[in-house]
Length: 378
Image 1 (spheres, rainbow, N blue to C red):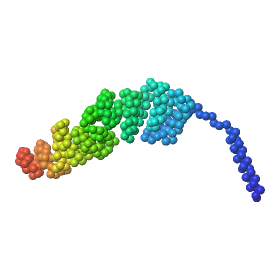
Image 2 (image 1 turned 60 degrees about the vertical axis):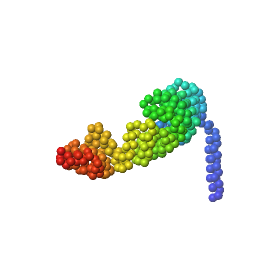
Image 3 (image 1 turned 90 degrees about the vertical axis):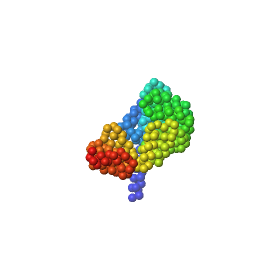
Image 4 (image 1 turned 135 degrees about the vertical axis):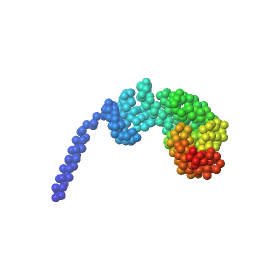
């Protein structure tokens, strides 16, 4: 028995040795050529673009990782081949590997500086690097990226706008104004550009703390963080009580969020400043009226009045009815419910509404007059 197992072990050892010898004598696979590596990179990149959702394009994903590695091999084998450089730069741009994309585009554009499509993509890379620097509050690196973006693509308004934003928050108000003026020429329909141009021109009297908070509030709104934006507007107005635009934005956003105390503070403050306009005073009236009947009821009433002034009586009636439902003691709203009922000759409904208006506000002579007419069916 022992002799038999010894033979089996010997045969196994010989078999393994033979396999190893055969493997040792097998020539290694030839290295991949630059052409083959480039073809593989393009194939894997195309596969990734077709099979992965755009939001899942990442250098760590298997098709993209292989594509980038193959592109790197192709360029390493033929460093001066612009076609291979283009494949590599495009791959790193698609996956958002910005530093490698920047390096790759720089190499490609040295060979083909007049490729405008490539310059546009390279500018996009610089924009993203600048925005990333901005979000981490690196106001030293951010303008470098945005400036390079503009050099690559002079008509890229986004790079100029964000370069201006960085200058504004960094306290370089003259540069900010100059850049916003440039942005206004590139994007004449962008209302925020004109707005920030005015802010940058007045930023000296607001100070850096207020100006930065105001600018960051716009950033929060872009991200739909309205509560965060309101907090930043409040920081801006606390740092600069003369900041008219910040008070207005605080008031507008407070009304949108239903924050009556904040809206009241904002419109009370802005209405007292030299630059107050009719809209500021109107909104002050809204928040003052809302103190007694509630913000939602007041807004419903004001919207109904706008509808009435445009001739939309059905919309107006619905709005006034909503106002009294929200605030049953809203005398002025009851008066308008009565008025619309009277105009359509629904005298019983008009008498009921006018009666409530008069009971809530005995000094309302007009409602008392129309109450009598409605009761008489006239």
